[in-house]
Image (cartoon, rainbow, N blue to C red):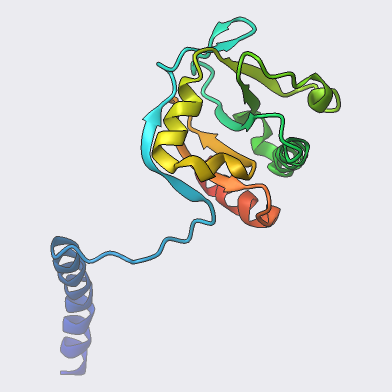
Length: 179
């Protein structure tokens, strides 16, 4: 008798878990908070059609790398963002080559003095300021008041952003999950 009860409990337990999880999913239950430390953009947007220019032409995502970028507006926080991006890239250890560090800039921006200590950052010119306008309309005017670092996935979709004042360990934790 004990063996039959044990066997029945052993078989019913996975079925009960499966039924409960299916019912909770169908009812629309989901956690209220995520464990991400960064902030997701209001909606994902594709940056491939925003006419972003690299030194070799239009920005492409054929290499499968994620973009770790900031928008250089000449703010004093730009150097802090560049330093943070470099340190986080090094801290990624074996995933260091899956990330490309980028500075987006308006055509009139002069970033030479800020970038002299960070030679491996790629400069991408936002010719018609379409990226700037897209982020501005999605996130509001306050987005560019503080320097932010944002993530663009390997398909060209802007995913999330981090303020430079955030703890680097929290940013690194998110990067390891994303990449």
